[in-house]
Structures are given as C-alpha cells and as structure tokens.
Image 1: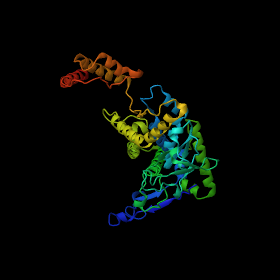
Image 2 (image 1 turned 90 degrees about the vertical axis):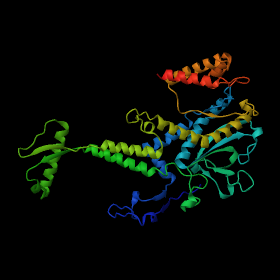
Image 3 (image 1 turned 90 degrees about the horizontal axis):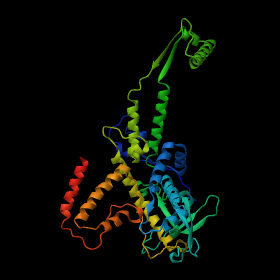
Image 4 (image 1 turned 60 degrees about the vertical axis):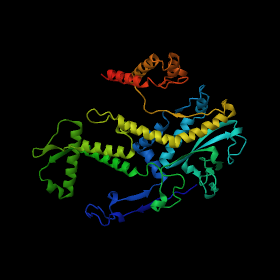
Length: 451
C-alpha cells in the first residue's frame, strides 16, 4: 500500500512589491485566504468531507450520477444481447462507483474477471474468452503501481503506462493483474513538476476534484453556520434591573441575578405573561437582516461558478431574473459532462463491449463492430417532442411531394426498431436541384408556426 503524506508549499513571493495592508494581512506572509497557497490534502480529508459534509456529497454524487444516468445505447445490438450482458455484470453500477472514486480520490480501477484460460497477471487472450464473470471496482487507495510495473519499451504504444496493477481487496490477499484486464479511471490533471512538488505524490493517477475547491466548500459551510447563528439571535431581550452594578459586586448578588435571569427565561418560554418587579422593565431589540439574503445568494452563485454546476441543479432552485430559465447554463453543464464521458467513460465502455463481443456465452459476433452512443442528458418535454415531430412531418410532406424520397422510406426511417428518429435513410441517388426551394418552404412553415 502506498503511504500518502500531506505536502505543503506556500508561494509568497508574487506580491512582495505590491499593495500591503498589515492590519488586513493583505500581501503579507500571513495572508491566509487572501494569499496564494497550495496544500495537497490526503484521502482521509476527502473521505471525511464526503461523509460529513452534505454539500460535498451532493457535488460528487451529482457528477458521478450524471456521467451514467442516461448510460448508452448500441445501435448494432438490435436484439439487446450486449446490453443484457452489461446489465447482468452490473456494469452501470460499477462504472458509477469507479467514477465517484476517481472524482473523490483521484483514481479507480475496475477489474474484469475474465475466463480465458489464463492467469490474472497475463494479458487477455481475447479470442478465447469464454465468459466475463464479474466486474469488481477498486478505489485508488487499494491499487498499487510499483516502479517496475510500467511498460519500458519506448517503441510500443503503451510506453510509460502501467503494465500491472497490484489490487488489495478489503480483508483479502493482494493480487497482481495485467492492465488488459482492467478498466482505468484517472483523476484531475496534476502538474507536479511545474509546481516543484513531490513527483511521486500522485504519480499516474491525478488529484481529487475537491483539491481545488474544498476550502471554498469549507468557507461556505462557515458562512451558512454564521447565518443560522445570526437568525437565532435576530431578537435580543433586554431586562432592565435596578442596582444591577451593585448586585454584580458580590457573589450573593451574582447568584440572585443568575436566578432572576433563569426565572425570566422560563416564564417567557412557557407563558405569554411576564411578571416583573415594579422597578424592572423589559424590551425586545430586533436586529435588521437587510441584505443578508442577497449576500448569501451571491455566495451560492460563487460556489456554483467554481464547481461548474448550475444553480438550478446544485441548489434545486430556478434561475432568477426576468425571463430567466437557466437553460443555457444547464446545456453548458451537460456539454461538460458529455466531454468527461467521452474521455473517461467511453474508452472503458468500448474496451468492455469489445471483450463481450468475443465472449462465447454472449452469443454475439466478434466480426460485428459495435458502436456506443452516449445517452443525452438533455431530455425534451412532451410538448417539445410534439412540436418537433410536427415540423418533421411537414418537412417529410414537402420532400415526398417533390419526389425526394418515398412514404416507405419515411416510415422506415422514422419508426424503425420501434424508436422515433429524425434521420432519414434514402436509397439511391437524390436529386438536389429542388433542395433550395424546399428549404424556403420549410423556413416559411416554421415562421408561421412561431406566429
């Protein structure tokens, strides 16, 4: 097992000739959050944040959930054999665990238990795969890569990549496995050499996605706690007692004063009537909270800006402002998730589906190329679907009327395999001469629909 050590490096020289305010600790070596510092936290901190901080847990779970939420389809898998095989392997669940661990700790591995007649530390004999029995997820902390475990031949495409992983099951015996039997998920990019940090701290894996934002999450938690305390003290009770200073001068007077305050609080909590001495008076002083909500909202917006998760998704509330929908921010977020899917999920899914196509018990043809189409996170409403199909039907009517394609081709293209599609497959050559007129008609119809 690797022993992670906390590494700290502070860069203070950038602001030596700039503005310095000793009282506010700006531009000084004790600048704290106003200076630039880098502290590489360990797995224990990230585990504690995920377990004990609801906001951190929500952020990590959002990313991992959205990465696999719509999963993927395989158009060539017309009988659903591939997807059923993946379902039996609980692939979606194991992928989600691995992505969550990669986001949280900086890396993960899924070990594929493959029956191909070879040992786990040998490369997969892809043409002799009888079955893929199980997918087993391992967090980075349970995976070790020794210096001798890397490909050393500079003429191969795998040069510099791990050839073997040492897996440490919880309570089990460590096992060395070949990389061809593993699906690897790496963490965030870590420029260790440029920062002058310890080069082996995050060798190969990468950093937790929380590394850059955990202090911001912590500060938001402090702001939230401060707001709750402020609300609890928004009303201050003032009880005026005659000769108060005289009572405070001796122990007996202090005890009498404490007893009086206790009886006052008790009476106030159980009754709407307060009994006061003729020389006592009571008043409640209310503190104004004007502007607190706006400041807190800005704090939330700043946090969503850092995480890249829209307000409507992160906080579960609608976007503010006149005619604001938040659709643009959501689309940007979904595009980012899709980009991450293409980098992290897609290569591993392609590797797994290729192995399944060779598995004897899958009943598939390895000669068939299986393409993976990632599911779209942006889902149309029923109203949007109806409007889209209406426009598509009008478009089809124009093309059919001009002889571009036949009703049979439309039917086959739109409703093949029991699913609606806007793509049209046309047999033979298409006369493009009338396309310009068709486009004008389509645009005219769209304007009429908008009216």
